[in-house]
Length: 297
Ligand SMILES: [Fe+2]
Ligand SMILES: [Fe+2]
Image 1 (cartoon, protein in one colour):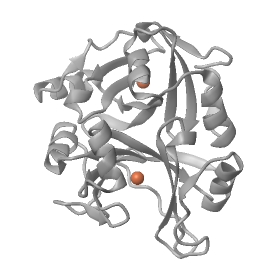
Image 2 (cartoon, protein in one colour):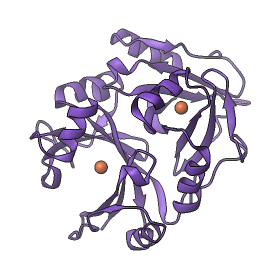
Image 3 (cartoon, helix red, strand yellow):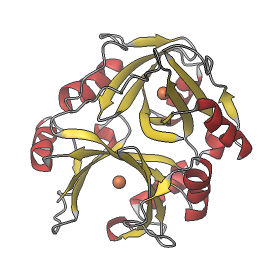
């Protein structure tokens, strides 16, 4: 079973700029036990230097591409800095990978380690072509003396967890086939009931939300060809579109991000009781990823 969003993988070509953005401006902290500053941890598999930045029970994983000929280096060259992969936490790596294979997915890195290893973690990767355009990583922490360690929790300012990762695709059918039928995630059928989901007038999209731990995967399907989301889909194809952090005090987070010079898109929306207030920050301010802030009212 996939039980939480383990991390969102972001590719960067400038590690200092990434530290300045996510640590100094957003106020998140690096898990230095795993990825000590200043350079993080080097992963030889793809010659990247990684910073693990806990956000709630999940993480931002900053991948600095050192080698232009590596997979990550070529991604950076082709698409620029920005979102690169989604990593889901599995409580049973072998069963989850088998389910993906049975659904016709191509596993590009088979599960590392073994099911009976003591401690450490196991990872696997599945090809973007059967994951709506994003690389899927799967992660499992292995027990020590029968106990699986809890994830560290992180926050920045009043940003306390990853509320959702936004994914854009062409229709609900392909989203349901992947997130519900293959990954086994549940739809929030209160907020986004089938068959039509939730309609967001601001960008003329239909939305389905899939629950994963304390986070969601928010799937948007454009209903016209002129919205920002529709243009993103036309230009880049389906895939990861934005990341949304939950804010416990959206006014104070907006004030400090604006003071730091980030480009806000639109004001914070108003909301009646029971609704939410949201705002966005432009990808050019965030090393290639659109950032949303969300506060329930
Ligand atoms: Fe990763
Ligand atoms: Fe969103």
